[in-house]
Amino acid sequence: MYGNDFGTPDEPGRPGLLDQVADAERELRAAADRSVESEGGERYFEALVAADQKIEPRDWMPDGYRKTLIRQMAQHAHSEIIGMQPEANWITRAPTLKRKAILLAKVQDEAGHGLYLYAGAETLGVTRDSLYELLLAGKQKYSSIFNYPTLTWADVGAIGWLVDGAAIVNQVPLCRCSYGPYARAMIRICKEESFHQRQGYEILYTLAHGTPAQKAMAQDAVDRWWYPSLAMFGPPDTDSTHSEQSMAWKIKRFSNDDLRQRFVDMCVPQAQVLGLTIPDPELRWNAERGYHDYTHPDYGELMTVIKGNGPCNRQRMAHRRQAHEDGAWVREAAAAYAAKRREPVNA
Ligand code: FAQ
Image 1 (cartoon, rainbow, N blue to C red):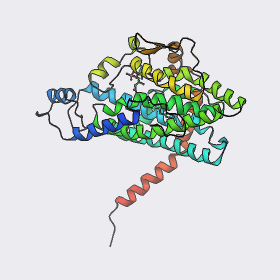
Image 2: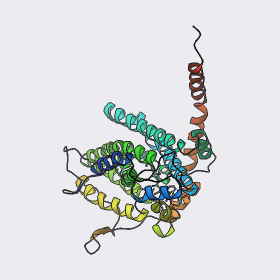
Image 3: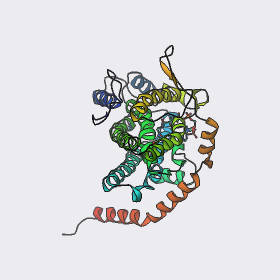
Image 4: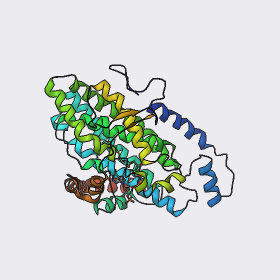
């Protein structure tokens, strides 16, 4: 997934994340021709899931499956939309025109991801408006990570490297999710997230190889974003209420802790190439386990942030509400235009 302009953080001999996305895309196309035969209903649903084929909107599905997908896809979509705010904070202050153009494109991509996901959720029988209302009423969540402030330009790099990095580690397996529309949206999103991670990594690499003050700024950003990024994967498996059922339905393919471990193992060699230190004195390779040992994030803090009491929760929601109100005329104009186009044309 990385170019060759500096280092190559993907482990040699192991497929990179984008290779895994390409594999998932091939499987998705193959799964389009269903081989499982049945009349529909519960047994058909179970057979499709067991055969790693895709459930489509027209198929029978258990209520719980539908509800879980709506919850997760809505939370995911809201995260993409709220997630535009921390980085947008730096668009007017990007250090060069090129950096500004790249950041603008990245933030626009996040809006696009939100749209794919809202559209995917709509195939489950809910409207985008109703999901939006639930977000604005504080009844649906968005990712904890976006409640932390972006204090310096290096934070834009740290978000790209760590937050987008955590996002793709979590989302590459979702390309194999059992629900077709979600899996298809994730393939496109992961390809774009890979570029996002790359641009953040490149910002940090440039700073880390710049002046001592620039390197210190990069290190400070990594110090502040490391643990919140680990917390993005959710509570530990022992406290995760949904994992077991979601994994049985093949919505989630790996547990929160498995993905968190995968992320840590991915970041260690990348930090070495950057020349930056991961702020965890307990971080070390455990040859017996074949993984790095590491310090878990403060899950008490995660719960505080999830409940709305993180550093920026109120600011993020106030900004989102304002943007929603300010955008009302655009939605009205688009609806009026669509209605006009539906009117029969009089010859
Ligand atoms: N923040 O039982 P589990 C991005 C909630 S996109 C807030 O383990 P589950 C791109 C969870 O909802 C980032 N809430 O739950 C980008 C549940 O509450 P509920 C978003 C959290 O669903 C980059 C409760 O805790 N990605 O970054 C969090 O099985 C840069 C119990 O937890 C996705 O949404 C959290 N961190 O697993 C954009 C990926 N963790 O609903 C802009 C899809 C847990 O019962 C800039 N989602 N909760 O009230 C998932 O993979 C899963 O939903 C998990 C949570 C793994 C997040």
